[in-house]
Image (cartoon, rainbow, N blue to C red; front, side, top):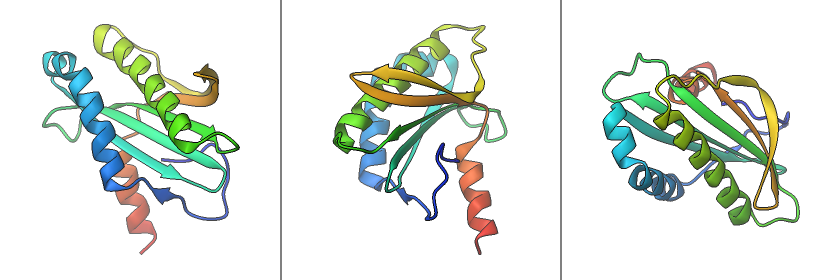
Length: 144
């Protein structure tokens, strides 16, 4: 999971509690649609001194080799509170999930960052086929 902004330091991963809280919310809201499509949602996030980075991957249940659809969002950390930024980003993830899970012919991948405004927060988004879990594992191996 690569950030939109180049940083001199490695980001701090979201706490496990925060990941679980967001996962529970998204899984509850999209439970029926995920079950119907045989999908599961995985949540990831990092904070940097000047950026909040968030991603969700939607994968086939039980198939680690299937190519996911991944929503990645980035927002500048400025004077806005991080919880307000994260709330807007999770809403953006919900918009993506709604479109992805309801359109059987969905093909909205975009590797380029696009700018959106949600709840007064400017968010930069991209939708890729990146498997974040595998990317994290590869980064860990490379950093040994």
